[in-house]
Image (cartoon, rainbow, N blue to C red):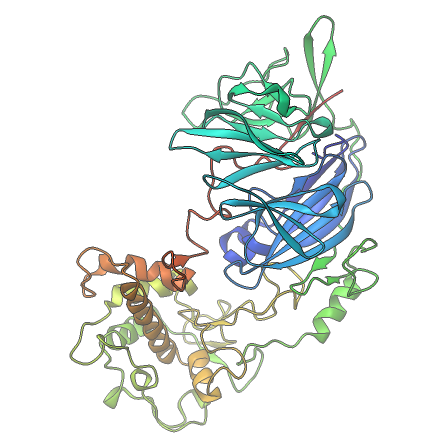
Length: 549
């Protein structure tokens, strides 16, 4: 809920979007709901689904985060006004920023590693270095932010940042301490054992369990639902726990008694079927009156504007869909098992070579194991990749599909291609660079136009055995990459299935080069700010579900 208590900003998405890094980075759709009338208005789509977004300022301003490209290498911060459901600005920044909240003057406060920075007008200003990773940022009335820092495995501290500097405002148990947006920028702190009055925060009193949501005045709250066999906490009508309903109002009655009523009108306002404008990687907004607009005035996308954007889009994936000369025979599980068994031992060559003209490719005879040889120490005379490991990759990446899942075994269909149209987990083409993962192993390396020989690209897309070979080469390279960084499992024997756990993780997530502090993984690394889920996470403007009249 916005700081003025008038609007709720909700980010929604189909459940399947949450299954991919791209979907989490930019698959969300944002709407504004008027808390007084229930009217729903489209805001923008293509935003993140992480726990810290959306965020709210002290008035009607709203911040939304979007990650462009892969591995969250670029961050886009969207500043919107919930009062008229329009986008004001879009900042595109290199690197990963998290927990961004609107700041006075149109900028943002956000976290970058162990720092809190101010971002405005293209400038990056470090406001404070913290002793741990800051999180749960909330805009305060002093023009700064209040935030939490973990001080150990079981404790955390509350901090207040304003124009004069930063000071510790309190502390508490890590699993119970939480910050919520308060009315007029007075942050509500739950679970704080001590709270400095000078920080201007409101202490949420009376709670005995972790809190999920608080009223703007801090006089009512909703507990985190019980995960034990018992029932969730029931509603209280004395200013205590609120019922778990979408939106609630707590009003004073008599001498301190509390009455809890629903704020949703008896006759709800009509829902909207209008799709919001779509934010692209370059900061432009598709579906607005001006397709390149990034400022106030963006309009909801129409079917015509979406169709026009689709018609103008040309995928950068090397091997196209819907080409009658590049149809893919769907292999059977036995076919895949045969190829994995041979490729893992570098034996898919010689008598197992593909004959000239195989799969109507018009190519001479070729050997998958020679096209994509396994790097040392793998290969002839060296260790092998267990076929169970490769088949685990194919089961997870494609469900054993080389062709589109619409094609049954033994029948040809389009190549299986991830995000061919660059929708980035959303619904409009060209929003981001297409993923171009092909076939069984969802091979992306070398599969954009011009990345490598088109003959090799066609074989990876059409021939399941070639795809298995390319996937095995990538997996072996991941094993070597981790070993070079000193990251190994058990006794590092590649012949043992369990020792491939980390290489499989790297195959999916990627490893960033050693920059002096060690190699780091991004998507899939559960200690990242975007993926870590402390018990205090999720306190965004959609979670402050109660207001006080």
